[in-house]
Length: 426
Picture 1 (cartoon, rainbow, N blue to C red):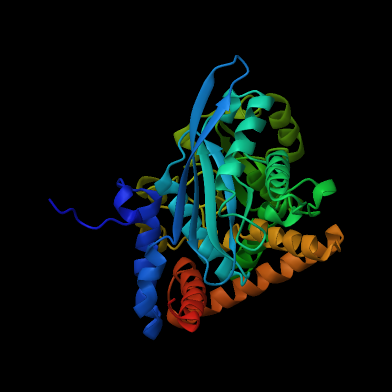
Picture 2: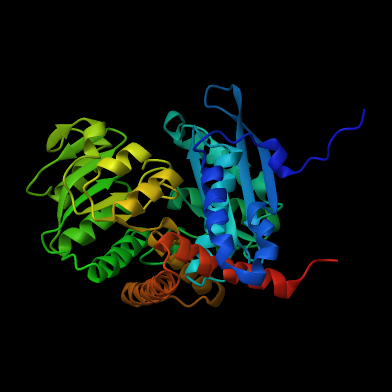
């Protein structure tokens, strides 16, 4: 009996509120604004390439375990793929597809010469020893080595990965090709071609876009109350910079719990506490995790995982401004509720693009073997983020649409113009 033709999308079964369905809903909202380019719209809904790999490693006790890994290249029309690698027990192909698609939009929205890609392994890295983690990273790199490279696809750190993981990936790829290729990954240690300013870049981008947005709605940062969900590199850096600008960090939530202080938490002390204890729990006044979303605040920064801002939370938040430090933290229905309530949302594809922007700087520096000072990097980052914000804000005002839809309009126009100019091969 004949079977129906299959494609990549046939192998995923999106559940309600899945990140992939969230992305597709965002694309559908932007298509009416693309004019003649809308004929290429299906390009945005279909990942170009997805690789699923088996990652077998020998454990310290001599047993062999198998982990499932992914690398998805969503679109390469504007340049090589760019996007992080996450190690998390809930990683799925569908999630990685969505994250790679958001990278396509993010890179185009800020004008970087990249397409979108993302990768991951379904694993709890906290259950592995350092040597097991290294063996897993190296085997995964070898398995996806057939599609990555400095001019093909450049991984970077993401959830539960860091500079050390990138060092192992760079070394493994280099050994396999018989030459040092520092540009195959970004987010590397400084001695291996990493860039100054990279660790805090995403959080700095959240601050810069938040500062610009607050200025336009007349919200003074001095004295503003801010709640931060997630206190890793992104959330803690954003909190640090906003505190330096005079804001009060009144509540913080992470995997360990939620804490608050009406007078403002001591961010530097909280960072030391998290480093020592692995989470924010035990610092300040403990509150229930659900109560975090009702803490009175002017600015809310979701900087953890996707799907955190639900319809119910959107209806009860007191924030005037929401800055998406995480990827895909807001469900489409919640987006509508926030818009109805007059809450300004700076979308992830703009707000957290500071990380990939400095990754771009690192990639450029690796190719030229000429490295910039941290002050130069921060100044370049600020300029790119401010310019991108101004263009997207202007598009939103001109078309009377949300910042998220405006960011997608700007990005999708760039992607689809590249697609149209390149044409179809053969």
